[in-house]
Image 1: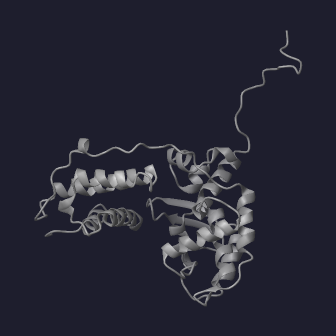
Image 2: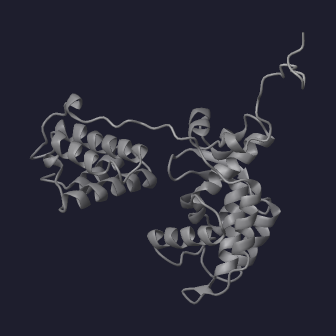
Image 3: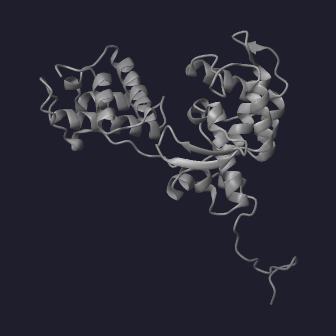
Length: 293
């Protein structure tokens, strides 16, 4: 290994630790953003505290604290590994974490849509007309997507990886999540199964959700559809919404439904503002005319 770029070393690092494609994708996004700021391709031996600190300062207003923390940690992770890797001809200096800037984490409450909002989105996409790439029916594709995302709670990356052979007649799914590598078990609703059957009858792809554009363009289209449906947030919040709905119906089961640990679920997915029955203290027995003597 002579002098790898950041992306080349990140690829080596993820493979070395048997990381998932989702993990590599996160490294790729972090490095692409970092190099976009630097305006050039960077090599692993060029990493420095000054560079990372300047990047953190540059992204303070444009990226969320969680994203900045994640990217900071990923860059430091491959830096630390490379600094002690004897296979490298040129290695970066040893990492001194005290020299690397901190990012304040802002604990924003998770947000999701109410059931009525999700129904509003479904009703909107169910009226779409036209085709993508002259072959994919817009209405069938999006109505199947919304129904599947709602009934399974799966992320986009997991839904897009679904193959026809993965879905038994019962609708019971056992999915190894792309992002975490953990498995989750769920059941597609009857409505979702019917919508999938109707969609798959229109294309020959083994993938249930036959792709019709690159992910970046897909997110732009999804954002536009959500806005036209009269909603805020992003379509990824279908996962938050479904998890919140399950937790309200079956207290304590939300983490199981989404395949998260309880800590991750309650910190990042469960929208307490949508809770059907919020806990509250008993009344103080105050009479209309004043306190009771």
